[in-house]
Image (cartoon, rainbow, N blue to C red):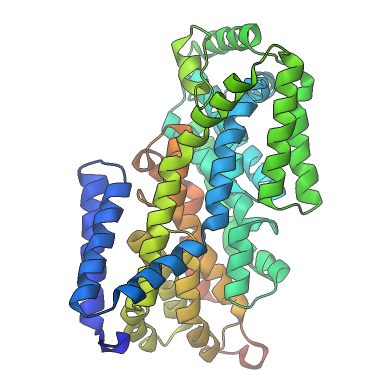
Length: 465
């Protein structure tokens, strides 16, 4: 059997480029769901591995090691599917929509959405949960106002990503600091050098694009929607209880699985209180296949007919396949081999930061998995960063700005597929409006070349930038 060290740079690049072309042509060119292109890529990598005489045992081990890292996220996705259905059935999301219609300005709705999702995301530490709960309610409000769905989705996703990125409860934030061996809270503080500018510019852009964007009949349509929701769902103040419960769980540092299970239980109790005649088989079916709205209004029914375990299985299958692909690439060192010559030629701090950013973007493009876009560049760039006198905090910020936030922009990415499926807007549609994800790497690169906010090791604080 040939050793992995026998794989050459050109060969690794060729394999990765073929992967990218296959996924790009499939998802963007033919506009098909990403699962099949990723499956084709896995088959091609297996064909290459056998041609290079890697054993089936190594192949199986690579897949197993890759999938193992995603067991918890997969379970969280299943719980989110259940949560969406019971939140709608309990009147929680309809109540949030009605409350939001009374509180938020039509003229400044889009920037308000961005801020609200940022605050909630920071508090609970999960972009997925923010998008799939409050995000759905805000999206429904935006579409009712005849706003561009892609713009509203972009604001929701950007705010959720900001919150996820800056929360000490976030899995991705903890992962980035752990991979770089950086203190979590120092990492979050150091993130602000790129995160705050990206947030402010995004807010300005949402204010410009969203101000006065609602059509003249928006208020009439809003009033009609409020009447429909009030007539078919229990719109009550205690619908805010599950939202408050999420904040309490976050304060008590209860992990996502525990938080979601508690919320699902509370929502189910609310369903039985509001409708004691609810039959358990019907409730179970709704959890499995999703809630179906019967208001008679096509737009409202389309918005609120969602959720259930079956609704997230497409994303779950994508997670499984991308993690399998990532495990194979790690097992065969393909990405590490492709990056090694590049890293050795970098001399300026700005070049190193830029390379780290693009490495994260590249892993997102090649694999489509958020965690691997942090892990692989983190392992490859830790020593070069330290050799150039850069602190681990400089690396951890690069891993966030080039890895975590970019996954939402990749059509075959796990995060983007989840957001697109949850909100019903394609990745390519909301991508141009996901300003926070687009701007974060830009400000990180600027920091690398200007030296502003670039954390250096104490003994090399005078290192050139």
